[in-house]
Image 1 (cartoon, chains in turn cyan, yellow):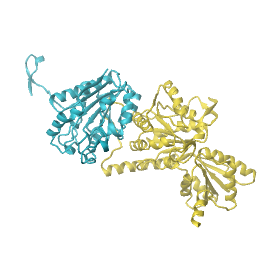
Image 2: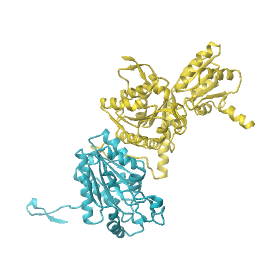
Image 3: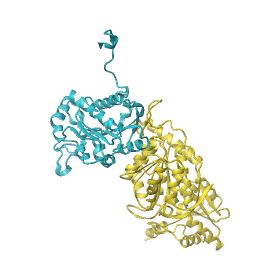
Image 4: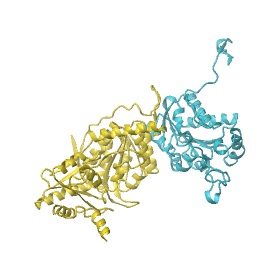
Length: 257
Length: 368
């Protein structure tokens, strides 16, 4: 794109206004068409670039669809076992307090098998940042019921729809963690529109800045999609988030201190 | 220079670790190892290190995983049920080739068992423990002094092989107080760790991972691990012998049980019985070759454990039928008395049943 370069006195120069973030690798994502994982990876990479963090970042990836995140980021990365990313992040950050440590986790990882690690790292006010991808399903293993699957939603382990009498109720992670004194920032966002994308990036940036300011645990819950397991087109999946998921998982900042 | 002092085994583990440069401890309370996190909580920060009381052993071992990724010497300690909870994490540490030290102050099992002494976690320690084809280098102290020195050595070995090392102690060693000469300084070598994830400043990015989705690649990793274990077998076998030269019967025992057996050797010799003691210090790699040597010299072996027969399997594999291998075991916190063991010694030397414990019961059942 050609734009006038005003610093050069109006002389027209070639200027790049959109490029791959330095913190994002050139590897092709393995994600399904329309999946938001790649979008959120990019937003994280943009924020790492803007805050100039790449040289001191250690990222922790989960078990789930984003298990290969270490291939998509250009910073140092650690692959954690299922649900334990906050414990691994704790180990890194305590030993290297000058590093920047983020964990990237799905709903099964963070709110089922790893619930204890999530709650206790938040309660300790561990100075780490967590990006939590909530799409209400176990995408990688075939679309089973997740701890965040909405009542009535059909999955491969609740084919008639989630019945609270059998499977209980979905966990609202932001609301749950907001009762703790440890977290410095808790927010829920939905990158399903231009505005939603901007708010998602702003929330991630704010969460990361909290860590840089030494304020303690920060978490951004991203309402995400799974067109493959939801059996929806990518566009319909985004509409579903906007029209249905946000009713049960209200967007906004829950903690900011 | 060294300072002679009285110390508990659990305290010696803490002091040995800090002397070896351990600067991160992550643990969860469980008896009979609670003195370790208690001492660590005050001594580790004084040494400039990190102490975190985790929410579970699962979290502890994963904090160790993360902290080991930074290249710093780190450890966790627990006792039997807690070590079981850590197995998945230990497998990841082995798969990702991270150096870390895990201490198991063994108690009685299975299940919640009890808080008394036990040696029934031998299989778990030396055969892998978690999922997958991996080994822990396993060291077994028999005194407070060895609790100190073998814990310190564990850090060197963990770094040398980029492999988790387990110190397999037990409730008596952890709780026992005896004299120890604490050196002012110990020899230790911390190698450079260019693989560590510390932020990629001035280098390419590092990834620490145990996921290898392509079968050929995962098999290559497994072969690399096996080659490493072969090197351990070649270089890291450790054992001790007591009066084996002229012995007709050699007791084989590790940890607390080996102390009892040393007493039995002296009791037996007073009766004119030629008995010795062979004490494996490294349980993996197991001292198979020296044991085979004893068998070839015609010595009978009698294995004594506080379990119903775990290490005895490795002894039998080592001697491969070249001599008789008897077994005597107690469990559940029941400690074999020297006189009990001496009875077994007399029986064995008189050509009685070589395995009075489990095998006799089994044969009686069969004959019924």
